[in-house]
Image 1 (cartoon, rainbow, N blue to C red):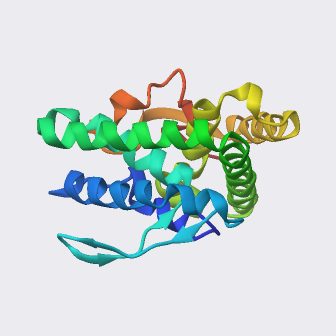
Image 2: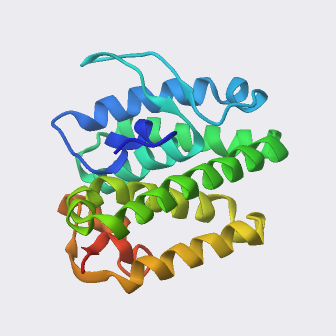
Length: 209
């Protein structure tokens, strides 16, 4: 089920392919170079063309998409060369620089992305009420939406997020908890270290009747 703004996150968490770290780094470098331009525009989601070892890719740029790929790179840290770690750190530095130079635009883009993702997450949970079996099948892919929301909140700080949006997060979490059955980590085991259960509880189980 594709929602507005979440297509660019499809590979942000839920898959680990051979050489994935190389692709992530190339994509992140391309996004980092476009940060200033991205923040000067109104659009929260910006498709970009990136030449990678797997050919031309069209990831959707957003702050959340960058955080998603960075999370996976941190999880795969033991696979990275010193040069690859340097590139990852450079991307993170560029994000911090952009946040310092354009604080209002940076915060506004992050908040608008949280709001958009909350709509997507709400639609998914609405669908779960009518088809719990399909909901459970698609949940590992859809859970990336809730995860990106949390990464964005942590990134800019919960005190920078409007209270009404935080209230929506808590309300939707309550809906999910009422149908949630705890279990194993739902994504590749290599990613569990950067998504601990106490902070990302929705990744440790699935919706159930």
